[in-house]
Image (cartoon, rainbow over all chains, first blue to last red):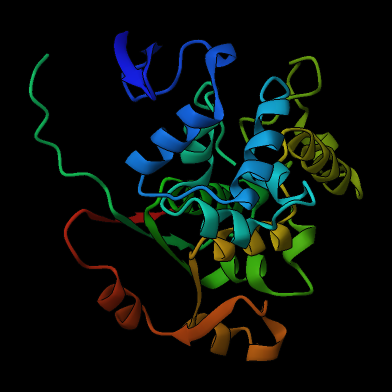
Length: 101
Length: 167
């Protein structure tokens, strides 16, 4: 486990940069993690992030996000290029999902 | 920590030559998993594997109830081979497998192809097998980019960190 200061807050993060405590997440933190991933967050991003945070417990898949009514799968890949599920969950401040779909 | 010197996998070229539910899904899960991780994925369907991209067959794939040593009854008891010979049993078992997968959010084959291609994965059909089974481009899923030879496929499979996988 490592310590990292994100948006002025000292946070515990996993080895690959996921927040240990999702309840400490703020939109400012999201923006800073996104910047590290090379993504400028738009309102659409935040809609997806909201859905992801709300469904974190139920287990997330790309398919589920695609059926959210917010984005389709292609749109999800476009918003978070290079690994939508792992990148969006990192920005959303939740645990890295253990999903193969 | 020891220093890792592994070259990261950046691209997978997957060849699927069989039509059984498990072989096709292995190929699809690997391809989808690759694009999900930001890797390139190309899948080449050949011989009976063509069923997975043939419109008429793709959502009706079966798992073998005969000659399948992994086959067990619900609850774990051995699955008697003779049972597998009864008409309808294989279809029933296959339908059950599909519904179990649906519960894990694993989609039917056509939707799985939608997901893979939405992520940038590419689907190809083998020319030799298409000719052999007398299929036409219009018999195949719209996601099939092209009908190509294995040589064409190998030509796309190169590059640092690329792997060829056969299921």
